[in-house]
Length: 78
Image 1 (spheres, helix red, strand yellow):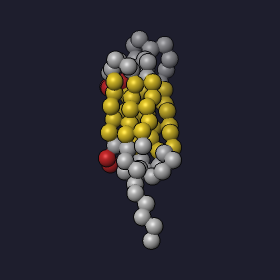
Image 2: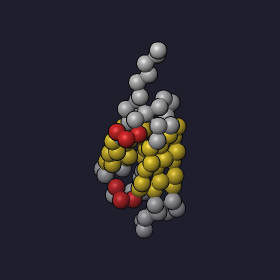
Image 3: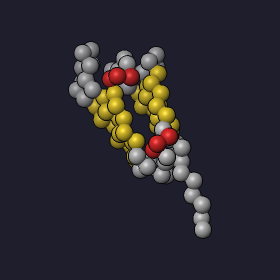
Image 4: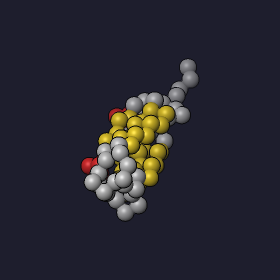
């Protein structure tokens, strides 16, 4: 499962934090000196449960995007 967020006011990975759980992911951006907006929070519900301990976060400084990749928990019917 992948979430990609445009973050045009961020210039560094230090400008945001994230918390991923099995059910959702929350990205919080702190206001920077050059930003004209205050703090920003994005919360996205995963459509399927994910392995929150194995999430990968990638900040693309050039594109100013945050990408969070989380493996979906495999469902084995009994």
